[in-house]
Image (cartoon, rainbow, N blue to C red; front, side, top):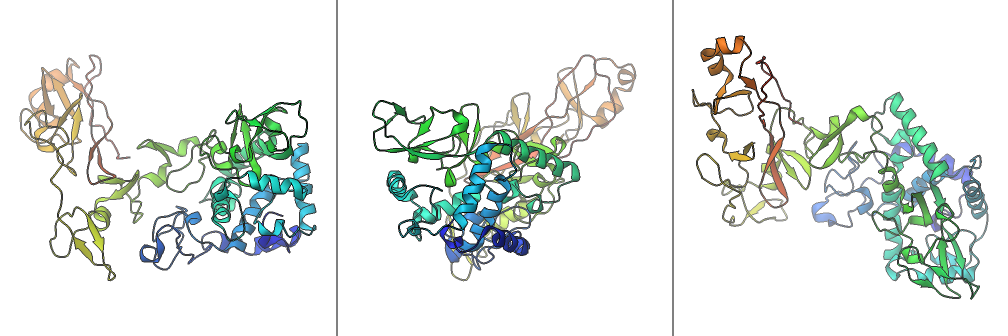
Length: 478
């Protein structure tokens, strides 16, 4: 059986029970579960799942960081397992594992096996003992142990239910649902496998761990992955995902070109994953790349804290997530009720009141190429042709007004705003001579508080000898 908590439930009743509780296992799944990482002080009231981000709204931790109810968690995981292994699969090992699951539902477990939340299916007790003894102590899934908690966390992380059931995704279109079904079918038919635990009983044969290159000695057990080839085997503790290095939960792996992966990281070899909602992105036109991550286009341009749009304002990134300035000031910069200025180190008392500590001296982050004065954390920096400027130093040579994000004309070694250029060079513009518009450019960033970056869209200009002068272009902040 998948876990000790479910051993009294047959597969049919479990499937039916899961469907009845599907809504609760979605948005309201495990509501109120205490956070194992933050504790009740920070995560007051326990898990409050965001409606599409797949994180707790209170503490920002993932669901698997919370002490979720084991029975519901196992039922959700079993739902994923049933979506992977079908009795009608054209792949023999998939059908075989399905039948092992069916048989395990109706087979009593030994007293030894009952100690564990999960055991490899079909192993005689002698080999089961060897397998468990070969695992790192902190990863043995003994009921109530840290190893069992580790397995439960990996169940949710390696095989997220929203990778396998479209009803747990946020408003997929019909073409996206079809793409998800096609990807799932291809994955299950061509990559899915379950490790097979075997004992080395032949003293002549040579078994070498595919990961650490260490030997598997006579009488020891190893894990084989048939997708990788008959001669490939691993120590039980070495049977891990090639990306996250986590022990492959319940020996479930996905194979590609010599590598074995958990479900999460195998999928990411083919589909981008949204940094905000954790779902795979099935439509290329919905992918947005920013801050070295990938996002649904409608999930990037919103504040990670309050969900308000960021399309018309600058923002601050906190651990790779965009925050609006208001949320950053209130929740991270912590404007103290007493000093009303940006704090350095800070803490909260039991009444959730901010205690202000002295701020460190401002850190200088390069100097302006116009005035020679350094940039400080939180200050906007404009970058143009590898040079950096304060906002008020990057100006029109004629009217002296800041150019900011507006278009400008580069001519005769100078730079001019559109209005000044229109007023003084109408004839030149009319004949499309050496007056040209700059091209829309990139995001520039300046460091701020620890783990934070202040970002804004700025124009990076380039001069072309053939581009005619045209009307103003516009750029929307990403």
